[in-house]
Image (cartoon, rainbow, N blue to C red; front, side, top):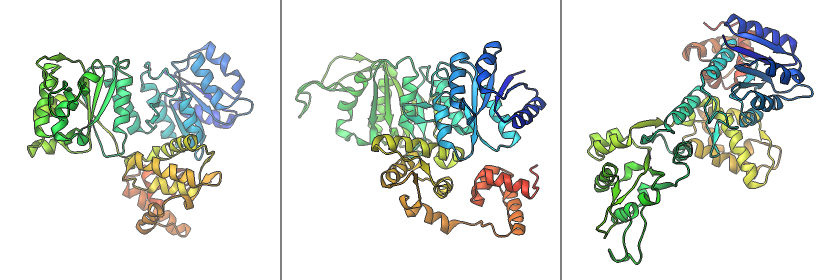
Length: 441
């Protein structure tokens, strides 16, 4: 039975949450006084601590830091107002496992506690900022935590990794992270854009050459494999390699040695291969454009990068993360986004994924003259498309109740999807469910 500690100066809320968790067989302690938390965690180990953000004298951020210092194996969850996403990011940077916006539904808090309990404490988790590596934000949704788990699982191994996904989803960031979390992290990480190498120079670029081996070889050159020796070679857009290059690459991976152009000697190399592509390599195999044996050599472990549109619970988290980056690089102090901008971000398809969002937020930060980014700083194409495609509108109470019920049925009672279709946030949807006494099966 897991031990849970709830820290909140709202005694009524604490007791209600305590009863809920006890019904699900958790052993629960409450503290209405944040000042007593240090002595409480010294007396007993808690698997999970849920702490409110805004409390008198001591903030939730201080509680998280205290827990990480006094009990590093304890998972912490920040409870905060729905709109305060920027603070949620900060709590994750301080070491929180996740955050949950108030008001929340019972199943939400139970699920997030179970996820915290299931998450294995590893050297990665013991470091602050456990969901942020190399300036890359994993996110806190289920799909993001699943991605994080895969990265942690494969990083310490010697397996070759194939990272697939649409452009802009962060494939190279994940490759660098895998390298940094591996035992090869003291050796080089060499990234190669396979689509940018002229065919006639592929052998020289990958394997090097000696002076005078061909016209223009005015000095010895060290190839990518030798540069990455002992470390990781990242082959970006590996599907662009010519068939002849694929044969050379396969031989090198099998023999673990290279022969520079013009040389008579083999050079042993020890590299880990991480490849990435936004193409369907299995289809390329069927069409005879990509070798089966090379595909299986590269694809010892596959990581699929989810598009941003499938990570709806992380969208505002990413937006505030990129805002913090933009503020730093542009020397600005923009605090957040107007509610209408947040609504646009949540409902936009983001065809360019994280790369597109980063550019949109950086441009908006540069244009902003106030404390918050408004629609005037956002490209009109983003929200005009949504206005044209909008299918659901809320009118009077009668039609609104019926519409909410219809939408819920359409999305099989997935509240996050229903809120997006209704063009409202989850908090508003929860309030309306309560107002109209709509039961969720």
